[in-house]
Amino acid sequence: MTFKLKALCVATAAVMTMGVTTSAAARDNVQIAGSSTVLPFASIVAEEFGNAFAQYPAPVVGSGGSGGGLRQFCQGVGANTIDIANASRAIRDGEIANCKEAGVEKIIEVQFGYDGIVFASSAEKGKFALKPEHVFQAAAEKLPQDGKMVDNPYTRWSQIDSSLPDQEINLVIPASNHGTREVFEEKVLSVGCESIEAIAEMEKDAKTQACNTLRGDGRIVEIAGDYTETLTRLDAQPDSVGVFGLSFYEQNRDRLQVATMDGVTPNLETIGSGEYPVSRPLFFYIKGEHIGLIPGLQEYAEFFLSEQISGFGSPLEEAGLIPLSDEEREAVVATIKNGKTVLAARAE
View 1 (cartoon, rainbow, N blue to C red):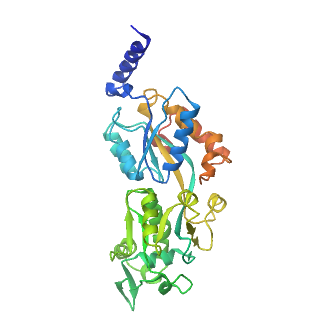
View 2 (cartoon, rainbow, N blue to C red):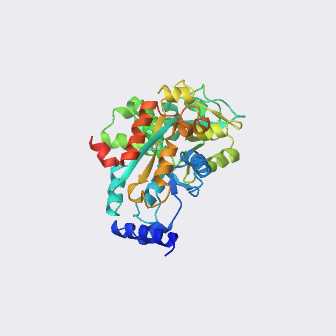
View 3 (cartoon, rainbow, N blue to C red):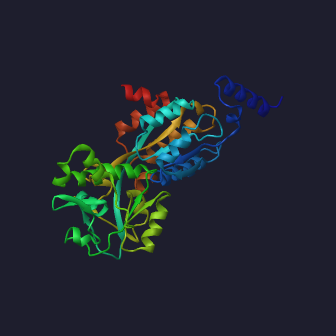
């Protein structure tokens, strides 16, 4: 028996022992999908990993949004399922339950840094100094007027606040499959909605309806794909304001300008310090059942968290990532090495 054939038999036996389809051992590259925000970071790491570890093929990285990536991740265990889901938000309890039902129980959560959600527009148009209430009033389906809720009357930003550009209201926002959308709703729309006294005083159900329902008159475009689609829309409609991660803006700052939020300009310093109000942690989730079966999976995860790749002065910081502190990094690396699952971590 040749060495390669013997190795394949051993790997196949191990897979069968764990109750995983025997084809799991046949795949020799790490497969990843998920967040559009995390996509450029993971792509950089995959390329660097391929260069640093000649014995492993470079990982294959796709997008699809945080929700889409986690759905793929939770489809089961085996070579026909992905090994890692990238996410710009934490995995939800319902997603964990879906994973468990499909046999994915060893979910390892890896936070690798921070990002900010920015509002950007054409560099050739007016500058925006936004507040959450501005964005809510631009996006809401109905607003209070004379004691009752009426269809949103605003068509230009300057009608909301005279300090804003006299431009048509056109918002290009991520669709619900993106983790960016959840943070946009929580840290901008909800905050802006609660700042309007007439809505804040409503009964719970009426308030929820007012805060969560967006206008449907064509002034809001939802993007289900990656941020390149948002950029295409901004090119086609120069008056538009797009919502995406800081890292994507940094890659396109030659053609875009970024809005301030509550008087703070988003950048590495203001997001890292927490001064910029619309920031979030970034994650990827490892399928623990595939560690030891998919070559290079654990090595990729540890490489991603290495200081030279995602620390201060690293390629990922240059691409727009706000790195973890040394203490945070050490804790996450220990989680990967120990294989601590997200359920175990949340139970602590």
